[in-house]
Amino acid sequence: MDDTRIDDFTIIVASREHVEIGCNVHIASQCYISGSDGFVMEDFSGLAPGVKIYTSSDDYTGEKMTNPTLPRHLIGGPAGKVVLRKHVIIGSNSVVLPKVTIEEGSSVGSLSLVNKSLPAWGVYAGIPVRRLRDRSQNLLILEKELGASRA
Image (cartoon, rainbow, N blue to C red; front, side, top):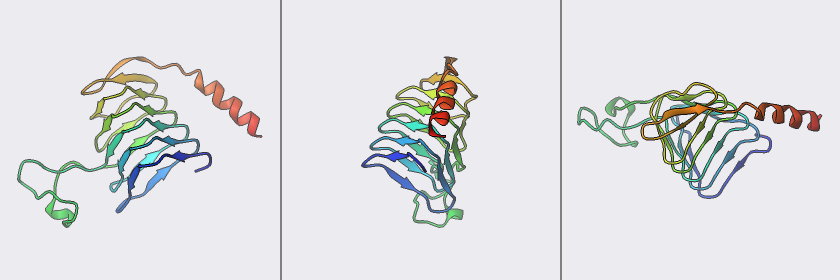
């Protein structure tokens, strides 16, 4: 976690599966990461203030109980690892749901709902999220410059 910053009032829950946070990562204030079913945040990725990431959710149909204090077999709802690949950035107050991978270099605009995995190098926004355009890969040149300056 070299050069990683996690700001005040952020909550990271890691109870069943691993939570992995890379280098040069920034998690801004008031983020909530429910990482109990696995969470990975790779190098150079970032979360703006208020981002919520859920690796599990409740079943609201009444078929299962809802409460994190109960045994897993009594509760339901989607559950699965969330992965943010290298150079991913997520805008303020966005929500990422379980079983989502956001591939390298993608950005998500503020107030978005990410309910599906996103391909690499796109700019996404909306409820639910949709691809708006390609994202520039020029930042990869800057990453190489940074590496050279550290050598």
